[in-house]
Length: 424
Length: 122
Image 1 (cartoon, rainbow over the protein chains, first blue to last red):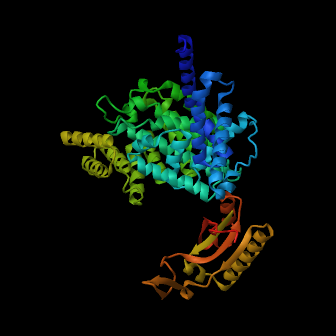
Image 2 (image 1 turned 60 degrees about the vertical axis):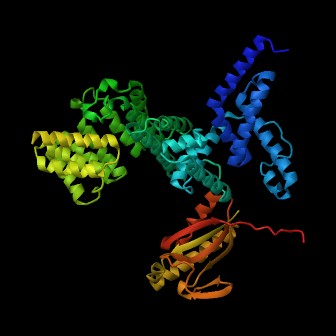
Image 3 (image 1 turned 90 degrees about the vertical axis):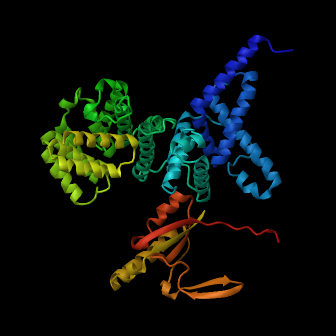
């Protein structure tokens, strides 16, 4: 005898609930299971078992009041049970099985705060400086964001086995070198946070670059990075975390405007500002304000503040270049780099005219530091062009073209070169 | 958990120290060892003679081959080591970062692998 229709509908609803809980909470549950079991692989297996149990039991017994707590305690119970069974086969596993240190599996004390802390522990562990930089990225996307190995491989234009190997190696190092599952102490936090922010920003820029490249099938890494940024700000509202999220949101707000319908790059000055995403801009600006008010704003908050000035200008012509130059001055002090100097020179050109900017750029290029950086040559070319120095402009566009990688930027430089040729 | 902290540096950096500076570094190192020992972190610590005193032994075609010099010819060589006890890698890194001779080069922090005999009860 088949089930009555009503129950089949009910079963379907429960299945949808399981799916929804998986999407919203599987990473939280995983983070806590890693904490309880002390091992990434066991925790992943336990997560899988817990959801498998949910699919079986929830339709019969109903959805538990706190699905997350149910999943954690079920996963933990299954893992410990599994370990005990393995111990009977292999006595040397005994020590490992004792690691969770539970003679009996007593019910878990559910504590929301400690669960949120587990998510932060997971982020800091995945971005631990003792792991290789590419492994930090892969592990963060896999464990914190829940991307599959295949998705990560596509995002980084590599193969799934390559990514899998990185993840396996990183997990082995976490286990063998005993990288602790913890949020760094106050004294280590600034440095450790910097690495986490770098990883998130790398994910973002990889996605940003990809969106203008040839392969549109790559997963939305920028979106993942922004989600990670939001999570971090929620868990750890440090000014630089706010600054990074603001920076990503403000850059993301221009996504729709920075490529033309033919896929060509559109410079900030020429973008249709009506295409900018106002929600992202408003979120970004309020985060910048919070970060800057803290008086310990760092490089991300300052870059976001610069982006916010652009975002606040209804047209390119009314951009407050004086404020932008000032912010670049502070940024250059906080985190000196030739690239910041270059951007400052471009802002000075906008404030004081192309000649002032060109003088600064030539000084940077003369030091040889940005010789291989195509944007330095294309910025020089642009200022020469505006000063009517066509031969100089052509030489610099050609240098930039020889160095450039993304296809859209290539096309932009070609277009400028052709324009010069037509004018000549 | 035990970690081996191998101190790597270019011997030129050591040779470049004045007699006074070398003695100061030695005193500082011995004092640091004592601090670690007092806190229960130190299992063993030794400085090593220069690599010019090193001999490398291998088995080649079933025969013992002995050559002059270190195992690997690199700029930086192991100048000393500390075997420490730390609760995890973060603590090990924190302790390693305080080893005075880190200033001459760098420290490799590596977990110890405990070996178990096939028949531990006999």
